[in-house]
Length: 254
Image 1 (cartoon, rainbow, N blue to C red):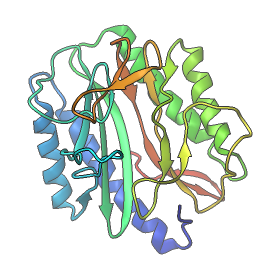
Image 2: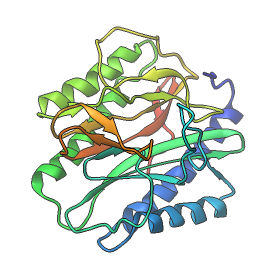
Image 3: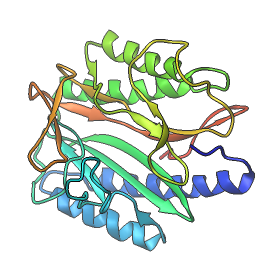
């Protein structure tokens, strides 16, 4: 993990975050019935190139020596939690899709995710999306100088479980800076007043993954796509933030 030491570094992280936010906003609008996840991937690749950035997910090494990730975005539909590989799947009315996207720009990373309802989505799925996004903001509110990572984690878990949903344990947020994944891990569950103390200059990516049913998940034979164990839908939101003297700054705000 790096500590952002000066105005130049934070400005570079803002610029990387801005690219991520701009591209995700385009993808959110483009995610409609009849579009394939490969088409969304193509939009992301083209728009990233236009902005002079590097799509950091593409060819990202597998953590266990499997094949590198082939997409620019992770496109996870319905019961898919994270790391869905874009392809010929056509989005249907009533689906939900989680889109995760990151870039490197001028040596600094930005990373963010959102979940989009496709066409007319049933009320419970829409509640899942809303609760997941709200839980992210609950976590960000706790990302204050002098607080601990556990305060962020606990705020997310408590809010989600109070709404009748569950948080995924197997995948967590992370530090971010010159690389997309840095220390410390940022769980979406845990006890308050536990873990690393948050200090000005730290940058972390907070990313609750919230399931309608059980928190248990499994990975498909493609070695990347993670699904809920019970087949119920999942949602995912993420922001990269910087800890400052004046509170958390969202670097990937759309």
